[in-house]
Image (cartoon, rainbow, N blue to C red):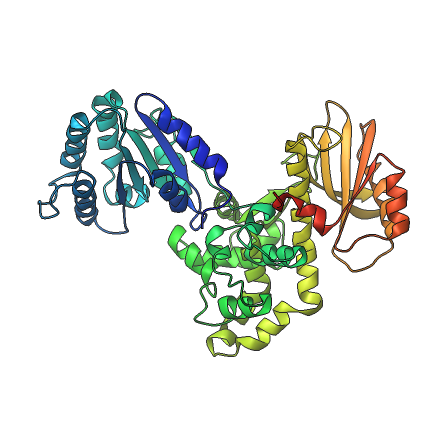
Length: 475
């Protein structure tokens, strides 16, 4: 299923139509849909498609040889190339003999695998580009899941390939609305719960069986030792990182509510002086993030680490502690606990805040907010009047225009709506330097008639229900 990558696909099509050699670098974590995007792009084009594997350089060269012969309609019985230089020279020669009206697309998927097996490959490819492909209309795509490798050894200033790329694209997981496009027919409340559980990674969402209930999907995918997502976070750590056990301990610490480097290091049993590098790596992968009260800056002493990817947050909250139970075939009880009751509601309530923030960002981009917001996030700190710590779920601001939007997110069936609005108004005053303030109340259920009447009489108050959050799904 190809959904929600229309912008990326359009960018690739624009690149394809440009004259001369083009080189696109596409990267992102595993499962985010890089190959699906490339497949959609090349489906109507002449293509040499090579996917490297975690094998020796010799074995990958054999795979490239087979892909090259297939691309140029040559017999598969031809002997494999003796070296990468021979293979690349052959491609350049063949491209020179091809009709110029239909550019060849060369896809080098999982490029880090081949380059790690043969460290001289980036230099060989640089020579091929500079002395061969640059004189053609060839479009080269280098794709990889190892984000550190792609950023340092392909895009980095010390890479032999530095300066050759004409476009780069980092694919991230879908936001809540694009994720919902993979779950057609699911009602809004369940869409929030699914997003809180599976996140926006297309591969994870594609495992949902829409003929089954949420509870059945979760039980079969997470709480069965044969389930596809039973050990997914651990598998990703093993594939991407050299010390998976240490990273797992750190993620478990963050998932348990430890948010500062010192507390994370203590809980994970990691040297406090070295925990920073692990946190940085996990941040690059998009698994965790460092957040600060909006307006305080990233170096604020109030900064905190948290699990960014919803599937990881769900897994470390509900699955990790029961791995032994699941392995014994008794995961049904753990699944029942995770799929119902206050525990799930509390967890989803936290993820609901991210959904609401993403809605605010979308509305700002579309020009539907009262002002053009430039910064988005949350805020927490001390209320000097109440002499206590407090927080604001949603904050969007434009400091130049002195405009502020604050929001409260309530994942409850009922609450005192008037009190919630008054509290939000008071907390907004804790953020100084703004001349205009706007308020948004996000609710799981439709608010009372009295609250709706009050909002109708105010230009600075907006009520947003689940239907409004998912209105973008409708054509």
